[in-house]
Amino acid sequence: MPFEQQDADSNQLVPDHFDVVVIGAGPAGTAAALRAAELGASVAVCEADRLGGTCVNTGCVPTRVLAKTARLMREIRTADAYGISVSEGPLDWPTIVARVRQTVDRVRVMKNEATRFADAGVKLILEGRASFLDASTLRLESGRRVTAGAVLVCVGGHSRRLPVAGAELATVPEHVLDLPSVPRRLAVIGGGNTGAQLVTVFRSFGSAVTLLDVADRVLATSDESVSHAVGQAFVEQGVILRLGIDGIDGLQRAVDGSITLTWRENGLESADSFDAVIMATGWPADIDDLGLETAGVVTSRSSIIVDAYFRSSVSHIFAVGDANGRDMLVQAAQFEGEAAAENAVLDADRRTPHHLLPAGGFTDPDYAGVGLTEVDARRRDELCVATVVPYSLLDRAVIDDRQRGFLKLIADRRREHILGAHAVGENAVEVIQSVTTAMAAGIDVATLANVRFAYPTYSAVIGLAARALLAEQADSAVTLDGQTSIA
Image (tube, rainbow, N blue to C red; front, side, top):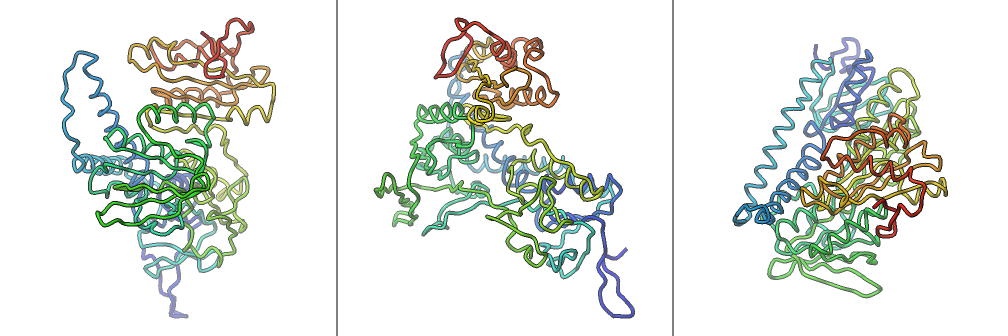
């Protein structure tokens, strides 16, 4: 059937109509479209670029491959301790870049969204950017139009450059692979999840790295114990931390091709020269040219304002994932996409439990968390309990020579509910995922304490932490960096 049909009476193109039109085929859009089709709706997906979204093509997947490469470099440097003589040799940046791009292609082939859409009866429209002509009509760059009973905006986001002179000289995270070589001296602006991971990658590759941020700690939204541990590890690895600065003034290309970065610190101007500067300074929603004002959709600070059910100010227009600015995570986007699809098709009011969204980063050491930080937990319940168990108590950590790390477990005063968990160290993300499963199942601390974990594993730290929360006698505890720990 043709996409648009000719109206014999008006001699005008009549757009196809769908129950649901999804803008964007990243994690949010894919989950939303497939769920809407599963519920029996007629669905179209409009994608302006590549299927899979930022995470697969230029974000999480490439960064994880770089993190894997960085880990291999670190393993090579410690191989002698295990009786293996390995020559480190020079780093081959073009081969690393090729490997990353090959992996991205493999992941895209494995996901095979186009076939999944076809099998589900979803119409995939790859005709450029979609924008609103009115609240129910979208126009593609090709000139074609579609109308919809409901529209789900799942457009993702883009890197934000600071509004300073010379900002165009900086590289943004999704263009890191475009660097001609591993920079000898690198500045990373922004100490959030993306910036922290890139610090680890390029420090492992041999770059002299300076990390700058207006926040007074790295990973400022993480639990303070996580921020402290990762920041301390960076310092020990030779990373120069410029935290709590007043701001970035600008970048300028020097005669020798280097970049002079100028910033303000303690009221004074400072400057240094770098071979490359990476700006990891924000991720606004990619909504500027959608015609949202034409549709009557209200936005704020580069995001679409939504209610608890992902409805915008126009009740049949929903915003999911990065588009609503809540949780910039793939797992959040998928969760929200499915919920929004149900709300759109069934006129339901499904929410998503955002406190059950684990997140982490592949730094050195890794870190992860789920639920409330200790500060937020104590604001809610000042008598909540928290304990920290160090990795040094784990046989597996000793075996692997990965004793650096800990698991913090937070529970309510009655120890009926786990409020949050935060980890630093080897396999931290996997450890936190196991705690997330327990939280989702509503398992109380006593039950978790009786779970038997395989030996020797990193997950065994969960049982230790649960038993620590149940311990009643003060003399069973020692102090680890100001936190309670079972020795």
